[in-house]
Length: 357
View 1 (spheres, helix red, strand yellow):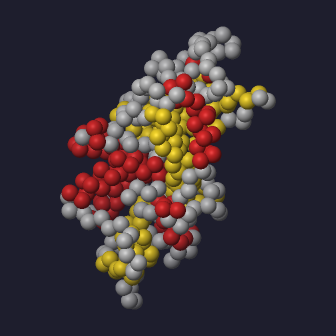
View 2 (tube, rainbow, N blue to C red; view 1 turned 60 degrees about the horizontal axis):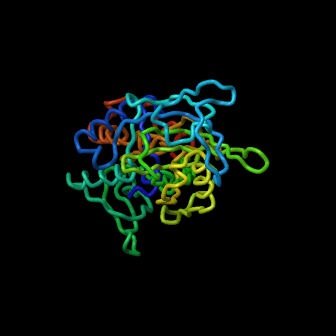
View 3 (cartoon, rainbow, N blue to C red; view 1 turned 180 degrees about the vertical axis):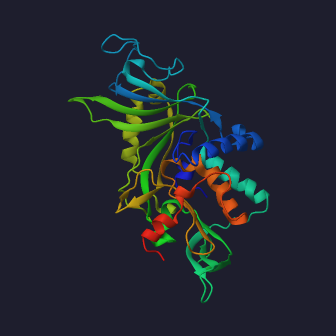
């Protein structure tokens, strides 16, 4: 469960996320779910402030005295609550989200909690590896799914009238021409040396080195209600995708670079406890082998009777998960999507172009 970025992402939610036909509905559904099922207590739902920052970090072997002025002597403008980073290192700050339009969840807790609620409502969850979608003899109608249970070596059949392929970066293993791959992103979780505010940052950090400044690293920083801070690097769309989520490998050196960069802008992060190193792959839509911008997700019928696709959410998978689930359920049980117009996300546009049929 939650083997891809749905279990190891930052969990940022924004009403103005991509795509615009999906994000506002999903943002509202996140709030509704949290209200109905105690999401604030169970999966860390809360509203947050989001900013975009440029930092020049200090040498991590020294401490700096915070300064409230930049090199030109102009007063810096940034949230007062952002007192857990060294203000002397802030070069620019731009607000990109407020508590009115931005929130967060803990992705793993959200995903597993929703799965548990589904089980309580009668859903049976089977852990295993999907192998193929099978069709009836002489018909295009889906008939079953072949899969290998997690705890058994033999292949099993699961009868089905509908199959929703929501396999994230591994979608192409089931639908080879779906043109969905994975972008690799390392992340770390730190428990700061003291409590910090609910500010989230998209940061470019350049550190002081012997030769001057390094080229910099782009990190996302998300403080969480449990007292930790999650940080991830920008995803690499060219990293090879392993066969299964069990084979995802963590580069310890890469995680150390991230930790050093955070230490260069904050005493609280430098002196905090490293709780976790991890890596995940987020599903991206590919075009001629490259990441296609603003192309997804692919949501809806595939042209194969009974088979629907719900994948390729890129960096907004957790954000758009509730709306995706609602709309797919409407497509299956009511014949079409009713809560939002997602015709622009029709998988057949890409699949037919790929000559799947």
